[in-house]
Length: 441
Image (cartoon, rainbow, N blue to C red; front, side, top):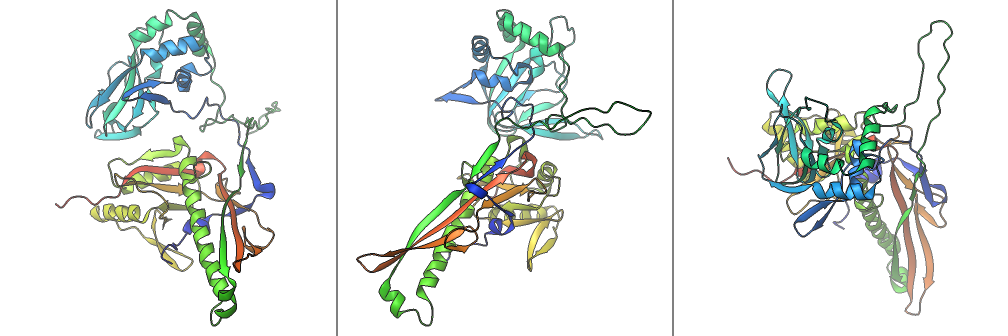
């Protein structure tokens, strides 16, 4: 059976009992409006920002006047840029709000030693220039762009000039009151991850009053329900009676059926739109490659997202090969680590495991995942339930269904599983990883 793969993800994930078929994840309350990115609606080639999504911009969080939001959305105009185009220049006044509809842009500025350096990327749903919304008319000197922003790929942007915003602002007393309150309100106590801060006192001098605090949780915690993959294995009684020596035919057919179920299980853990790792990677935990193929610099960027006890990288075999080519081109030779007797390539001591379930697009791009695992580490975990009736393997049952009129023995084979990301920084993704070979020199 050629479809059997190494299935490293199933082997490496810590599996946790999901009693009652569900697993609840209680996270600390985070002061965010939504996912931190703006969403758009398209009609053919025309793009429009969803008015409510403007609440993702910090100055407009909590503002719910639909008429004013709709008027602001109508002020944005669409622009198309080609790779290499300069969107804004460093040092120029910030006089517009920019929403990234599609594409990738690079922030470029001066490095610590005078040379040009990259200061991050912008991608779908990101925005810059929101400080334009809170600059008062009495402010003589507008803010300046801290970096030059260039298009890395073909980009579609929506922009709103300061003049257009001021015209809309003058027609909306509620928006004026909201922005005035925003400018005058004290900053809410948060930790660097946007979570509600826990007040703690340290040191001792005299008899100070200790701060009181409590851990505030999300009001609607997510519950992961176990998914199921099932099939019915049918074996003719004649085969079971006559051909079980020297090999047990039922046992062998059951073995291959289970292999197929486990392959489907790993595919679902990666690609399922509800609980799959690719779809559950937080948008703030995604970075793009600086160029095309995955370079050592890109892998380091990914490590900065999951820097607390990273367990392993997971990548398509072709993405691993592309990373190896980039390392060889730079004269870098990553070490290998021993995992259960297997020599596995690694980067910065973190093993890189192959997974052919991570998709490769038509443009020959893929993704690389990095994760921290385990409940104790607040990482990524697999979910199953053991102790099932007629359990054959942990989380997998084989039930005898009887013999029909055609003398076929039927067995119901069921595997129950899911996955949960306990906190967002447990999982990171490197996107737009080019795996195609470069042209000949």
